[in-house]
Image 1 (spheres, helix red, strand yellow):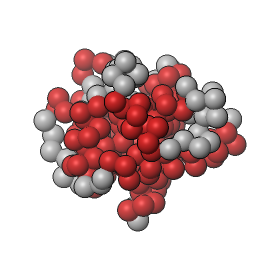
Image 2: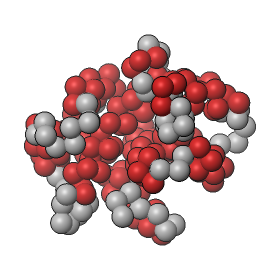
Image 3: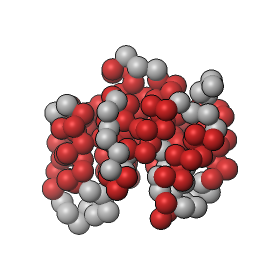
Image 4: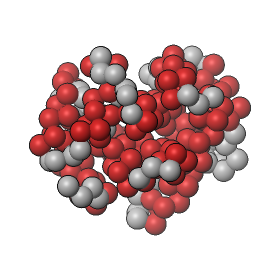
Length: 189
């Protein structure tokens, strides 16, 4: 099966109508693309994995991500891709054995958190620093749905120091925002 972003985005829109969930998926796609570049992996495949990781969340929240796994298998996505999606939720008990799986787990919560930081800044992405994100991480009242423990644990599992991890995600989201704007999309508008 050839993995293309165009087909993946159409598939995502079949299952996801919520604008905020689509933006989350776009943010995770951006971070996966950034890490794929950093690790010398296939940018398209990793990006699509991020894009589709929550495909079932809106329609099947109680079965997430297992229903998504079924959908992706049905569509012919490769086993390592499907296992990365399955492993991004702790509740499945799925070991994250590949770099793709560990990365997806590591950037899911953090991508949303960085976007939350961007949304409260007057300059948005411009000038966003790791120390600002770390300061917001300490503020339990800010973006309180984000699991701080998971962010720290997942960076360790990926084998990346937290500051470097945050910087990689900031860079990926900033770069992707410019690309998405050209497509008439945005992570923050």
